[in-house]
Image (cartoon, rainbow, N blue to C red; front, side, top):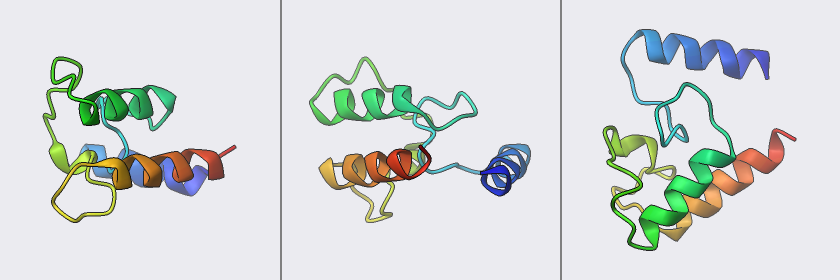
Length: 79
């Protein structure tokens, strides 16, 4: 977990996208999962997608349920 946190700090410092940090708050957590779910369901007001690559978890250039499942799996592994 510490290694992952260090990588995230380095990615933010370099101005790069951090896959999974949907709301760009510096952490990957359940709030990101909720934002991604709402975006997929059509609530565009919830997510502005400043960095859409953060939401494209599987990097297929489409934000959909597969990205949601990928993020859900990532979060469950951190528990």
